[in-house]
Amino acid sequence: MQKLIDDFIRMNQAGLVLELCEKYYDENVVMLNNGSVFASSMKESYDKQKGFIDSIECFEVSIVSTLISEDIAELVFHYKMKNTQSQVSEFTGKHIQTWKNGKIIREEYLSIN
Image (cartoon, rainbow, N blue to C red; front, side):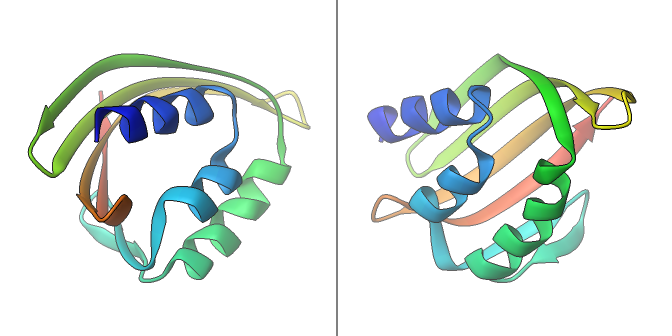
């Protein structure tokens, strides 16, 4: 599982969000954003993220911490992004992922202040 997570981190840092969505999210993944359902399938997640990703002009993503325990990975990333209108957003978020058969079947995203 470590190799899968290392690749996920690498892809996220490279801004390959849509590609990692297709590669690592189970077809029926459940995704939560700060406690609310964000998507209940890989396709729904992909479609929702595509509009956001298309608006990003420049990004910096760094890994803050990783904790892996059996089939659960907790990944904390710091994001700094600039959109096509030159607006900058900077935030830190924790991704709590449940993995099964090389795919993420559940992911909860939590904003960290």
